[in-house]
Structures are given as structure tokens and as C-alpha cells.
Image 1 (cartoon, rainbow, N blue to C red):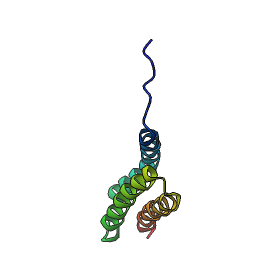
Image 2: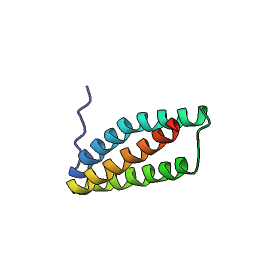
Image 3: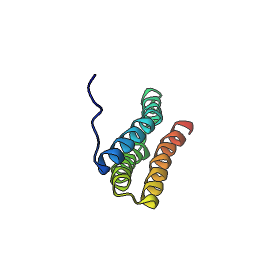
Image 4: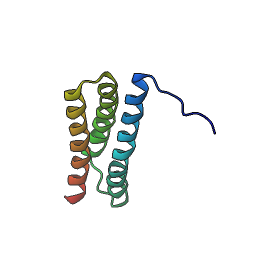
Length: 91
């Protein structure tokens, strides 16, 4: 059996940030796919998608740097962007 590789301090944070990003991709992808299939896309949809992308990039950086307020803020921005697309579907 191969030994488990040890991660540097940033490696553990990067792995946790990756798992967080993967977990948040599913709801975002579902909302975007539903918006596309129902043809309810308007100017808000791509704007919210770009906001979501950059919020996730900032979340990754905040997670690795260990700044908890950055992580919370960018996580919330990402979820609000997903919710904006959800509201577009409902209208």
C-alpha cells in the first residue's frame, strides 16, 4: 500500500477550497441549465454568471490566504449570483 502524501499547509486549504467549489457548482449549474432550457435568459443571467465565477476565484484565494471574512463574503456573493439567475427563471 502506498503511503498517503502529506500536503503543505496551503495544500490542505486548497483541497478544502476545491471541495467547496465543487459542492457549489451543482446548484449553479442546475439553475443555469434550467434557465437555458426554459429560454428565460436575459441580460441578468450572463452578468450573474460572471459575478459567480469571480466570486469563486476570490473565495479560493481567500480560503488559501486564511482570511475568514473574505471567504464568507465571496461565498455569499456567489450564492446571491445563483439566486439572481433563479429569480430570472421565476419571472
